[in-house]
Image (cartoon, rainbow, N blue to C red; front, side, top):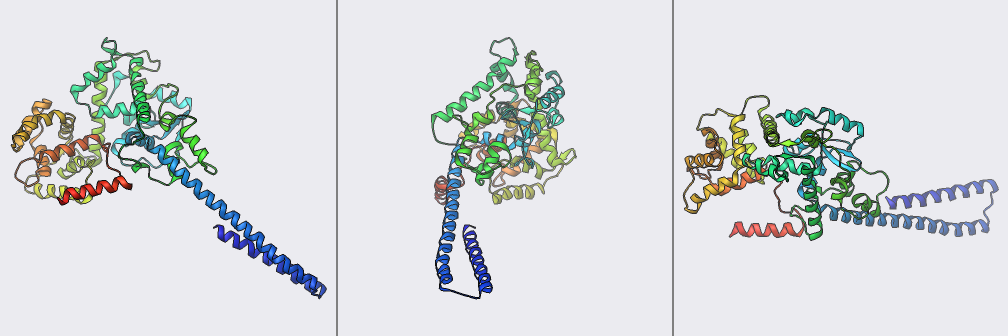
Length: 471
């Protein structure tokens, strides 16, 4: 671009000089030595000036490239300090209030059921009247339902620390509800106040500060989710829209980090406490309501069921059942399988289910199985006796272990479907380690730490994997 501009300038100057000379010749009809001297002196001067302009444009271009590289380094160093959950929160958060990012209730649902957020031009900047409207439509804890998040849609906000709390709710077994409540109930009066609940934010904030200050290493996911061009990463990290005007390193550093703080403190940690949807739901607009254990338990059960309903209906498409293949796809949804490995498991299920009656799987059966996954550690302990004794795990042993751990029985048809997927050689015995590993990934919903997919670390990982498979 710069070379084209310099050449164009040179040609323009030459055309001007040539036109000027021709006009002078027609008017005077005399070409003197003086005019030749002017031409002989003027042409080199014009060429020299054009060359200077060209070099100046080249210098500007090289300077821009250098600034862009420095800008990329700054952005990468900031992204290295973000965990997978922080990156996902920033990616899905669609609203901002006084410099703080928030998810809407719809954003939260999408962050755990979708790979990418809804397309948007920019983040919505909330005003106080928006918050007032959110408070008015938020139901109280005594009126919690299994469709509250869907009913609120975009009329509720969730902070980053609340996002972490809600993620933990999704994987909590029923036996863990009382433990979680008692952790909040610091004075032991069987009720949780707003002040006690806000201790959660202090715990997570302290953990983030310790993580930043304790080392310069990163989680193994690295920049996997933020590996875009630099301008796009400014969009993702900060404003949700391309910044106006030219970008230089100082501007980016100031917008990303502020004066002294990292990006987490800048856009994730609340500087001024406001009433979020969860706070209003638990403690009322004035914060004077105290949360009972029954209300807390009901909220956790409702949220778990609502997320499962959304996931089930995505495959059911309005029907009351999903097929066995669709059930298998849900189980393998968040596993880190290559496409050919994924197809192998699905093809195995299709081939084996043809030999049995296909009757579909109801939501109740699906819900019971997912609730069992929340107690996977207890199940693993129960199954360890069999694995240590090199005893195969049949469907009967599987059902008995589930009954002991959860107090509930899974349907025979669901267990038969699971064995069709994870019975590697078709002998009617469960491939235990494979099943446990995949179900842990399923329960984490894509938040498991994965190896970096580029750079030296990725190369070493690939070499190690190849050595293992070839040995």
